Length: 292
Image (cartoon, rainbow, N blue to C red; front, side, top):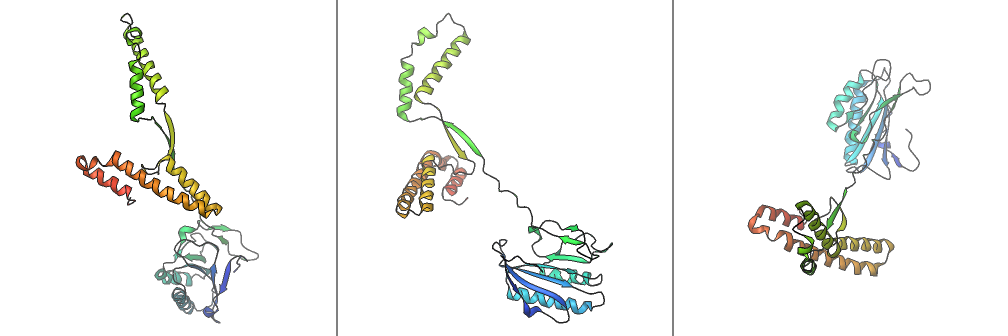
C-alpha cells in the first residue's frame, strides 16, 4: 500500500492477523466526500492453498470492527482473491453495503482481483493496465470520478422605463405641445401618418423616459434591486478586507434596504392578489419569507 506523504495515514495494527496477509489503514485526506469522516483502506492477498472460510470470517470481523470504531467511514477494500474465495467475499460484504467495481478478467479469463467500496459513485469505472513487473495479473486502475462543472446561473437583460408620476406627466405635456394637426395632414395616407405618430411617441418616450437595461440572474429573487446587490457586494468586500467598522455600517444598510425592497415588492405586486388570487398570494408570501 502506497500513500502520499501529505495524506494522514494510520495503520490499524489491531486488525493484524498472523495467519492472513492483510493490511488496514485509516486515511484522512485534506478533503473528504460529503457525509464521510474517514477513509478506511484494506488490501488482501489470498494464496490458492489458503483456508477460504477462515479468510472470509477474518474479513467480516475486520469490517465489523472498522464500522464500530469509525462511524460514517468510507471503505475501499481491494485484493487478489482466488477463484473460490471471491464469491464468498462478495456475498459476505453485501451486509456492509460494499459493491464490487471490477467487471473484466484480471488473470486469463478469470476475475481474481476485485475492489469493493461503499461509495462507488465518487470513482470512475476501473480500467485494466499492463501487469506490474513479473506478475501475471493485470493491474487495475480506479481513479476519482470527473466532477461536473457547476451550472452557472444564466443572466438576462431587462429593459425598463422610469414610470414615476412626474415622468408620465412630462410625457403628457410633451404630447400636448405637439402640433398634431400640422403633422398629421388630411392629405397624407394612413401609412405616413402611422410612421409619423410612431416616431413622435418614440421621441417623447426615449427623451423623457429612456429605456434602462438591468442585468439580473435567473436565480435572483424578484424583489432584489440593483442597489441592494451593490450594497451586498460592498459589504462582502469590506468583510474580506478586514474593515470591521465599514462592514458593520454596510451590514446595517443592507438589512434596511432588504426590508424596504420586500415591503415595496409586496405593496406593488403581492398585496392585490390576496382577494383575487389567494393561491398566488400565498406563493409570493412564502417566497418573500424565504420558504421556497
